[in-house]
Length: 320
Image (cartoon, rainbow, N blue to C red; front, side, top):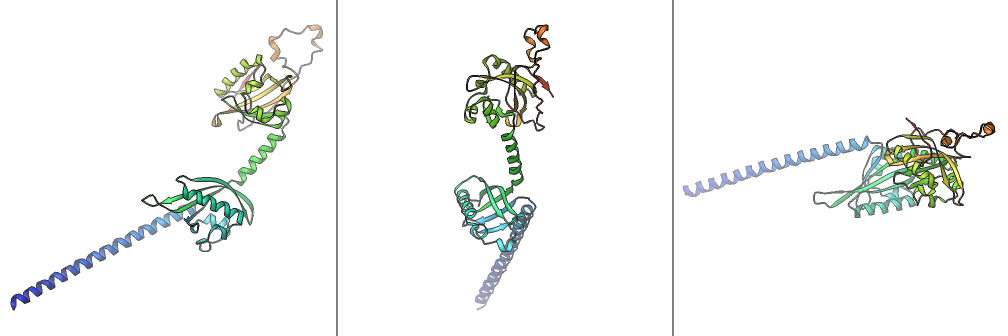
């Protein structure tokens, strides 16, 4: 009888011990869970603080395209609140053409392992704005996508500036071109095509030396070498070969642009080589010297941002 009682007491204590151990384990697990949740909340707060202090619009949507997170810039630009935006899709926030474009990019991002970059015009209450956008997937530890992050950076002012520069480029009475150090012109303005007679496609598909008089090519390439060393050419003269076979003297100002590995060139037609450029020629007879016409190369200012143009050829003067 006593033995049975002792066994019962032992079983009771064992059960109680197991219960205490189980309770302690559960408390520890709950504490760890709370600590993990707190860390996650801290991480979310840190993430929100980071994206809230960027000037770009940032949004995160689930794989179905419904928003789960937006930043303050998103709220300000779209004149909405975080509470109103969460759970909405593109079709509920943007006009149909924009929504269709964004949904297509969303699908591209989900299917890709790389960021999908594009430009997009958004019709806003304050007027249309252009944005450089990027969409990329967020993935779990197993590499499975679970959300898509989108960023939109306003480039409206940059586009306006580019358009203004393009208008100046297109309307200039000077010849303007950007030529790579590989010898291929990347772009030429309408005046360039008007003076030499070639189309822009012809000018940008052949080495620029094809349009330089054969006798001036060696000097022109020597001038290019100076540009590659960082020099700027001022009043450099050479002869261009027009499409109809005629010859046109040109005076150039050219500056290198190392960032784009190119030259930005500005040229102007002249009636012939200047008096200095013709120094190697026999001196004119004194009896007719007073009657000689001295045609000076026009003063073409070198662009402040070192935008360059073609590499000419007869004479050069370094300008630093």
